[in-house]
Image (cartoon, rainbow, N blue to C red; front, side, top):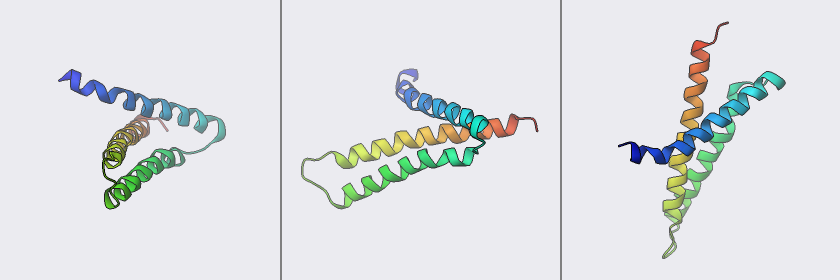
Length: 95
C-alpha cells in the first residue's frame, strides 16, 4: 500500500513548500493566505480547461487529454495540501 501512495509525496511536498513560501510572504508583506490560494487554484482551472478542450477536440494518436487530466489531479492534490495546512494553521493559531 505504501508503494502506491509514494507517487503522491512530491506533490504534497510542493504544496507544503508553497504554503511555507506564502507564510513567509504573509509575515513580510502582510498578504493573506487567501491571495496565496489563487496560484494553485488557477493552475488547476487551467489544466482542467485544457483537459476539457483536448477531450472536445481530439487528435488521433494524442495523449493530451490523459496528460491534462493527470496534471489536474496532481495539482488538485497540491491545492488540497495548501488548503489543509491553511486550515490547520487557522485552527491552532493563538489570537
